[in-house]
Length: 234
Image (cartoon, rainbow, N blue to C red; front, top):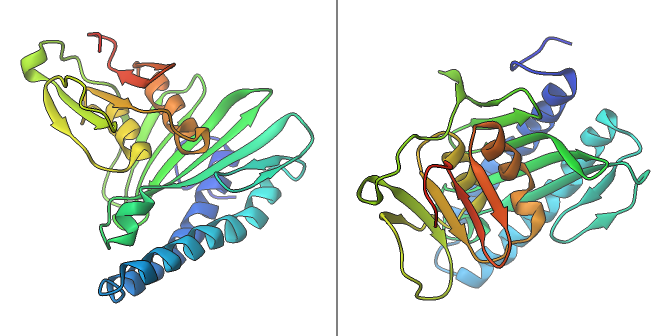
């Protein structure tokens, strides 16, 4: 097959599956914009759209690893016990309000380790991706480049994304985007210096975890999820 992005054949097959699914999501997004007078109706529509993501991408993914399992926020399907695709729609609450800041997060894990990660923003068609040991990258129709975390450490210079419900002390210039998968991708690409979140469904952060680490950052998952460029503590 002709490779679309720098990386393995498996990575490219996963990206093509994302692109096919994203084209339907872009149509759904146009429909959601017409439903804004009824928030309940928009929520129901987006919930069904999220289910369609799982259905539409599954057949493509099983061509990549036929015996792999599947983990999403709603579905856990056993496979061979070795390989597993981890899939989520991140930023669904933004999607509901016709806010284009949402993404599909997709990871391939083998023997408990993430080997391929993709975070794809379907509206602006920008992809963040990584393969274990090969670095992290950003790709769009206009630009493709390796990404690295920022090198900032002075608290007055930092931009930190938060996804928390309490009133904890914050650091730096605060952002609350509502899309954890993209928050992690932006830490990996130096747009944010850090990200702090309440515990999240693993399906939403599996890809972002590898992106941050491959870009030279640090990520810990304890009482909070904390990702940084590794040059300061939160």
